[in-house]
Length: 281
Length: 276
Image (cartoon, rainbow over all chains, first blue to last red; front, side):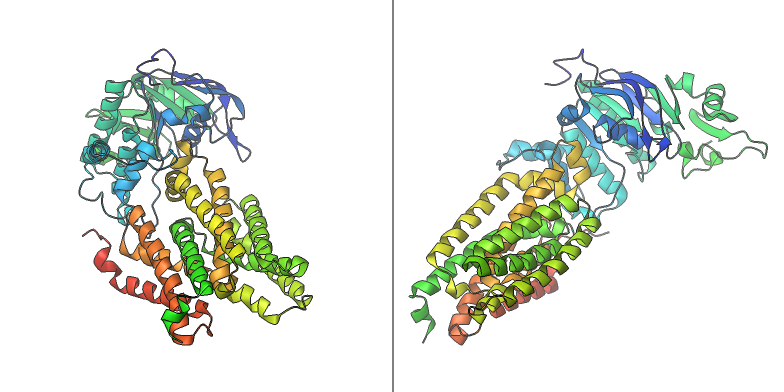
């Protein structure tokens, strides 16, 4: 079953959901329905529970309150229809596995028994690899590749599984600007073509700003959801952070900075990691 | 007496068949043992197969059944106690120390042939009876069938557990199942090289294979091939050179080690390194 045959079931329905980890409260009372083909960006400072939200959507973390439905069922039951790009984590250099094998898992990694792959399978795997520009290193041991190269293979793997829901945890990390654009364009193309809903955790919304339908902003145990223009305003974020925050727009890019007494400092590091505010202007 | 004479003897042919069977299952699980970081688990399981064998010997003179029982119990305990690698290793260390002591205690109550004890530790492939051979055959075939079924999801779970779990692969259950396969293989291997030397068939061939390729299927095939060469080759060498008076374990571990050295030296030539 795919979203194409059952477009009515929302991929995600979150109702009154709350999560606490190690006695610390993360988001509480979260209500959110994600529609097929919707592109949702999840923003927020480090430790605000962005990754935990993805894990909860996969049924890997239990909520402390409320409920989550994935395609109308419990999260764990939806896993075969979900593509997951985890946060970057290197592979052991000694692992006997090529990039190509890693991508191939997207197709049949969860299937038991042997199957003999025809040329068509090889072609699909190749296409997925070429789409992320990984052709040059797909046959090298995956542990010897750079973080960005591994990340592109993970994107290829997730897309190859033709998911109806794509959960991405900082998929653009360690990619240069042109690769960031290429990878986000691929993800965007998938959801436009196949109606795949996308939940995209990121610290920098700028590379994906043109594609984002809605933003979920998590701060402490509070949250806000809405169109980027509605959420990413000085007024709204100041309320959310409970501190004075300035949202500035420079040449189509969004900057979030603290407006403290000691002068403007970069508080929106979760938006601009690795960039000085001036650089992006 | 020459090698031709021995190869016409039933005991030698039985031994060769048993050694090959064991080599196939060891070679098959070896790459997973390495990618799952379970070398110490193999060691622990085989040491406790020794304890089980000592118990079996004491109770009804049947070390194999005892070894199998010991290995299965340990695999189950490891599976329940330690999920994460570090946790698992410390729990194995705890069980290992206790189990070995227990094994020595059990042996001190055993007043049969002293050679039985060294046979458990260093293997006694020439003493394999046809009943034991049948058991080895059953174990070997079960391991091959189970591994053929589990191969892909187990590989996925070993390489990338987080994504495998997200894709619905029962990572934990597969891990426990693999421990049971491991216990079966270790018991079988212990008959050939003895519990102390199991690592030379369950790890060394796979470690050598990994030096030569990054393709999982090729690594598995090479690992099986190397295990067979070491195992059968060691047996034949033992017969040809020492007339079977020196334990084949000595030759098996030496050949296994030699293959590893060669692979290590030639590895960079074969294994595709990316020009950076």
